[in-house]
Length: 253
Image (tube, rainbow, N blue to C red; front, top):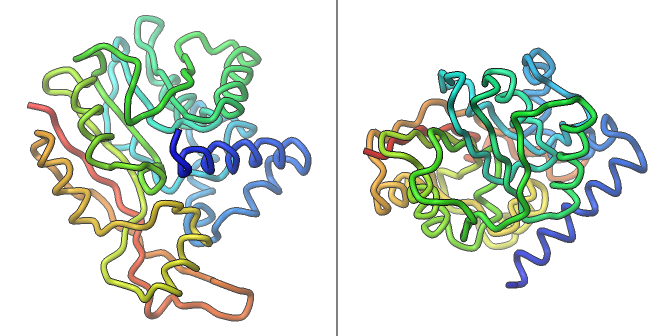
């Protein structure tokens, strides 16, 4: 396993440990203020919301742009403790199913325990690497993801795997973080640490090109939200920041 993935596993296992120690609400308070906090109130209103599954790691609502059917099979890339899976599961029937995949064992264990505790039968949580997924070709109707792709080694490989596991006419919808301008090395390192984007922050165009390269079409940027960055208690770089949360939808034709 490469050093980036080892670091991710350690850091996200530590989040579970921290959440169990200080409580989930305090855990959410500790995450990047400009990314999760502006959307927290919307999460609380979602049908299927389970508080202990929400670690404050999401940045958007990709599932809001999909009209799920009761028999759909859905995949959540980088599912963490399962909050988005539980919200989507509420829209699926007993025939449908959502599978969450994550590279961190502690997150998968947490999600599975929450599902069992709440008697949610149409979810499954799989320990695995989204750059090399353990799923059959053409298996899912929809793939979603929320704040994950700044953590992968290769966005191209991840999108290629996503394309492979989607059915024909399947839809890929994700929310993530991106930049619209170059930053000097010192500032970008601060931004990476502050946002948790361990492998850097891409331009939105990089995401679009990577999707096109693996065969996706009808690629649409559905939403953009500028992020307020507070790199220390006294300084904000809001006015010069070109960091955005965005949601993209693409189709496998």
